[in-house]
Image (cartoon, rainbow, N blue to C red; front, side):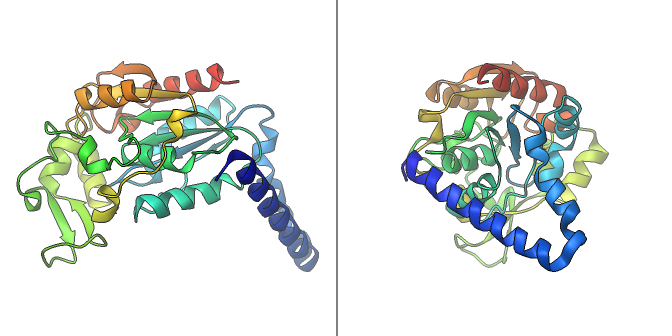
Length: 284
């Protein structure tokens, strides 16, 4: 879809949404006033972009909580929506639908698998001013998330059943099978840099990704036309720093490095916030 067609579609959907909300307001009266006020919250941010944070696999939106608090305290409008983790195409389409509800400029931030989702969803979107990849899996067209981690990843093993729990349990798994990280893999490789109690809680509450999502070829990447920033966690065992560096160079991203593991958005939210705000300032 061309940028012009995308803008036309987005404006048409917004007009329909506003019309529906108006009908609801006339029907429900004052009960809808708080909703209308909340809907205009991004507009109160003036010229500041809305920062949309997209989480990765084996996580949920709460992983952004400490980053959200910092960005909000700096006055930025922020959204951290749920990433369905069902397939790259459908996850990207869901994010695209969320972006269509936002008026004004947008900065998209994706962690791990979420980086694939934002670069797929933002293609041709004129409102997206910058992409920020945090320990990101950032594909070129035709590449998959599974292959981007590289041979040195803790997830690149001969027998996947030693690191994953698959639901349903029957083998072989299908593209629709849910994949969870085993406890030992989560604690030793995924949640490095976190306290053990915190890591155990995150393992117990992890959200699965489908096997198909990890192996689905990406479409045309948004980073080909939208400026990007890449935060490399130099102690990451899931997507090693060498693999991250290759993707950062491939995408032409502005690169920052921090001594953090895969979950630096939790362990080092200040560093992540600084990279995001640098992208915002550079693209105003």
